Image (cartoon, one colour):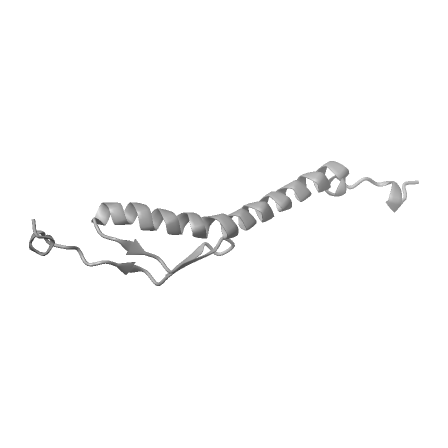
Length: 90
């Protein structure tokens, strides 16, 4: 006679629990890294590369990123006026 405790459920075996915990931990680490790393990296890249492409100073006040919803918010974005040749005295 087989009892319930002697049955081994494959979904609840140690290897599946280990894989599930690695998956959950990996997703949580990606979310944490995205939440902590993306805003300062994006802010510096926007100010540097966008300013270089536009030929004017770019400032970004705040960058908010929510990796669980992929929501990106930029606050306080400002572009400096482009100086023409007559204003520079050239």
